Image (cartoon, rainbow, N blue to C red; front, side, top):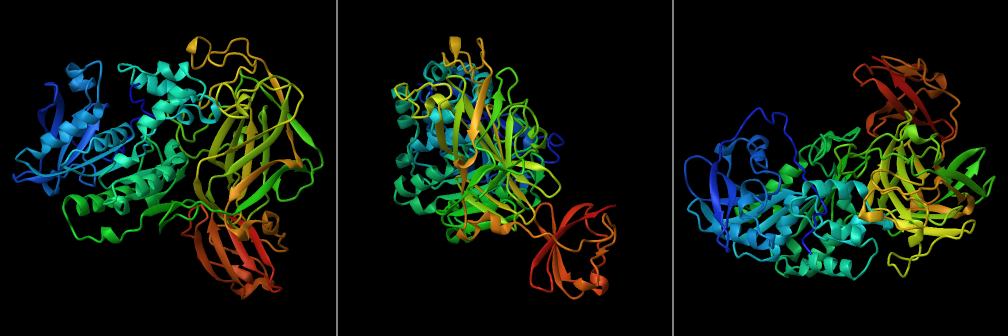
Length: 636
């Protein structure tokens, strides 16, 4: 079976992309079978020999003439310490004429590395770079162990081709399948996916042949994003490299995790400040600095301190800062939040009592819950964090939310447990975890779905259709994530019977899932009624985090007796004489501390003209030592 790419094109466009154009030398790189692959060679002016960065792409090498070079070089080849060779994959673009029926991209990568090492402009040291498909081919190349390959920088990629990669929770990722099927139509191989909707020996063979950390003999810098669909596998990939790759390089692997999407189908990419509907200016371009330091150390032999860099650097989403550590955060402690209804409102709470035992919603395959951002890969749907407020009261959804928090850190893989029943023989249950901002936005953190017929496992032998009216429990994990919910934020959980087109629509008939091996066919679909157990016992969310956060109820703020005035305001506000001399902090809706000080006369705060208009959270401790909070809106 051909290598099935689990990921797609990802480029980070610079602000002046397309404004400048590089003019490379066009060369033909010979392969062992006598074919030649087309490549663009970028050399610093003035002659000499250089370490070389090899980039192998199925997306047309000529695009880099406008995009510029990686590692911060971009268009300034005159100051580049590197040569770059951008190679079209066999069967693609300039290398179409070299196409064969049995392509081995690892061998092609090996041949390209060794050809580079023989050229007069090469000093014999070769590294590889690239995101997504350009990253996957780096693993294939490294697996072949070319002697002159020194290091590799794969971004947003997981070399493993797996059942769960195509069928997360037992449901075909319609969006990924259709996008990849179009991009790689000329090499085929995707029919095998729909021919095997169960976890079987075919997937065992594919998974065993596509994951080979024990074959890696060069240091790797893995670059990933919290909003990339490969996040699920990144912790395992990194740990396996550190324990199974060649002993000489195990301690040299590094990982960088930023607040980034996969890229390739929208404006957001690795290193851009804007990700979905949020902005992470503190992380903009961070990968370029990190990658350059890694390359300079391994390819140029610079004593730049890279050997002392921590194995993992990750971005603490919600706190807007980087942290160095030995492992990705994955807390061993959990807090349990039950799905209950109190005072007519769905709550996530540590309480175990509810005013009702169950709540129902409908699931109509013809009117599915729409995918709004997230870990997507489609020209039709944005990537990254997006506001889901529009779905809260839409038919076919149930929503649960905590009370206001004094801060909550989630570090690891959330676990979803839903006790349910339905009036049909098969349904899907989908959840979306949301960060609820003080201004009312409900930004997506993560999502996941699970098909009910796979309640016992994903093999055909495990398959079990539902008995209408009987209770069942689905239990699954979402991908690892790090996020800090700032004071005044809440945590929300949206439950539905679909999330389309990210996940295939369940026809809810209990019949064949993909008739005629079609990724998105509805044959006589049925509307289902699904009921959740919200008694406070059967359905809950387990969140990994610090022990001090286990009791969410204890973080519900007490109502303040005083409030800022004027509100909205422009230059400042006051609380009244009782607040005089008390310490306070002021936070923006991104959870960033923007000011701290002491209330002046009449409990006043002045000089706030510089603040960006918007909603702010004010926190202070009153004269009795009780924490207080309120919101204040800054106007232009």
